Length: 442
Image (tube, rainbow, N blue to C red; front, side):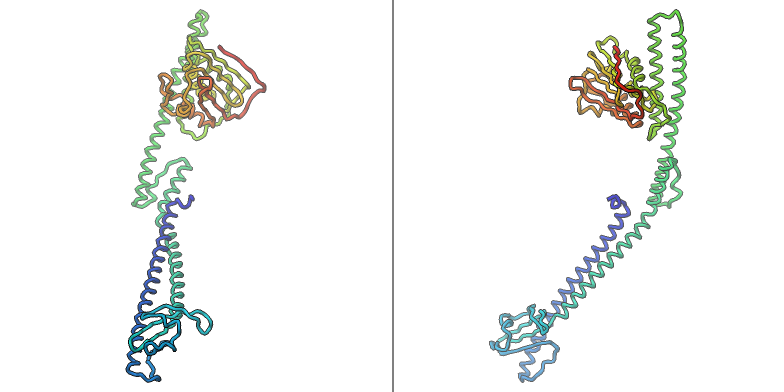
């Protein structure tokens, strides 16, 4: 089916069908006109000869008078005297009839019977048309052969013309495919004439140039933003570390400095993840870095705890088994940070249960929940749930893109007992340790 959808195949099939249909129509018209004209001519000739024979007999009543014509059989009798006329002929009125009778070799032979009747004479003219029938069959075979030959020629012509017509388009497609495989743009216009294909190549060159320029600007912007953001974040982190080392610092300022430190770390992780997504890589970079998911979960819970504030919400982290994934810790932290942060943010009371193990992380909350039909839509950019407050609708979209990059899967579903469940399944490369373990944080 793929071949039939190609433009060249459509041209070939069109030529073949056109040639076959036109030749078959011409052959059918030829056969019809030949049969019709031949039948009319034979009938007219028989009636004319029969009238001439009757006139000849009127003028030459002698029995041995020979009528000068080359017909096979001719018989005339006085009106009403049918004793010498075959019984099968006697029932026919004036006219010409198509009849079959057995010949000397015992086979049915077609013939035409012309009948003439007046007050004096009844005349019968028998004309063998087997030769004409044989000629008609031979003509039919010849015409059918011509149809097949012309159809084959149309098919060959279609192949040849399609190759000539499609050669510029095929060349353009091959060059574009080669550029896609190399990952490097090249100029196409110089390889084609000033026709429609050349105009298409020129448009592709223009589009490729603008796209390359845009990608280059995007990469430069990302690199500049990354550099400019990392510098103040490094200053904030070092200053916070120096302040925390002070011996005369009180407990409340020290706790605030820890919050600043967690926010700086979260910003750095988010920058790393966004830069990774902005590169438009088809596959995640594999440098062999592994991440302890349990440790990242504990860090994320600690950094997202301000979303709970003074709400009556209990947080439990249950570790069924240690889990490591081949991915940067910043990527894992951003993915889990959005899922856990949403659970903390939209749970007014109750508990949030985070379960780690078996290649996945599950986050269950007792918040307002989500509608089952909206579960997948929430991962689209700019879409927010109907039961939540303000937000840009970007966090879950970032999680979905990171999962697509690393081959993970993320889902949202309502809990039967109320609330929602977020499930992040990793492409598990290595698991460390054995046996269940559990810790709890409140």
